[in-house]
Image (cartoon, rainbow, N blue to C red; front, side, top):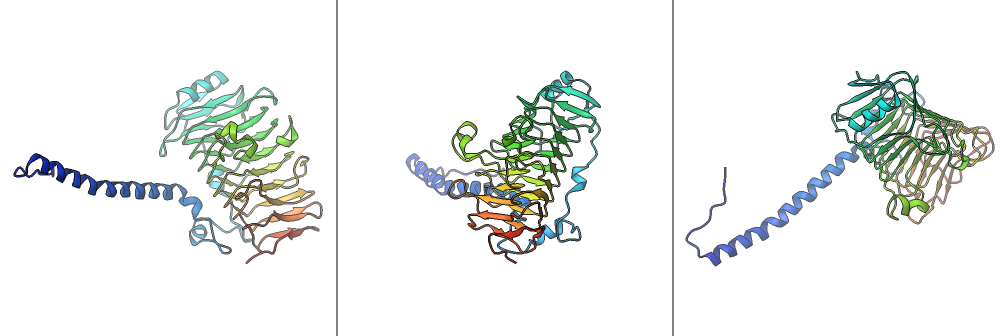
Length: 377
């Protein structure tokens, strides 16, 4: 081991002076290393999403290598992830009581297997998995988590956790279906979420770096139609003081992909002010039941990529941006989407335009107009 050698020929005041000079020289170097290290960690976490961004036209080469083309210019949804087979359970549950006990006592690497049947209640996960050993709650559509009423409660609550996987089962009959508060690096995939009082899946309170993929969502807004979104990202500015200490809710870098969303009374996907750098890709929207919204998708956040989605049956617009607060609702990119409107609305309504981009590779049918802005590319 190398050690710092002290010069015994120097007097104590001289040695103290030299040590002070050495510390003064080392501190800036240590601080620099910490800053660089933090930047590298941040880059690693955001790398998946950062590859999706572009300036005004053209996909990144990393994105093209990572995805397969579906043949019509859009990128295919991640069906392998959405329909992945459940791992072998480490814990089998057959009753609602056993399920909550398993959630409470879970440790990294556990796979909680849901037997077919009905699990009535509200179920909360509050312990963390690890990046290489997430905690998995897995079942089949015959494994039904039932909230016992649409007027209150979350059927499944991911409560400030990291590294969870919810996969394959059904969620029904709650005020909210799946609520993620302060949840990071987790996956919600292949669920069937239906018969919900308000929204089906909600990521909020700095829920970031999550995947919501391959879910089937329908029949929301049974309690209050204006709250009946399919997927809801972030928090409305009017609720920031309740959720995020009066600051923007930074539910960032979430990927919403390959979901099928129908019979929602409000937007299929609502992306709130305060959220950034997400991806909305390869989803299918049916707006036939919209009564409290005038589009499938409403983007109020910044720097989102909205691509390869298909929507039908909106009596008004398809995709919208809004500026709820100064500085929000900008730098979003719309590419390779398909809009089939029921009326004569705008496929892409950007009000105001800000720095949002509608690429010319989006397609429309019916009497719709592509956009109120000039397309690019």
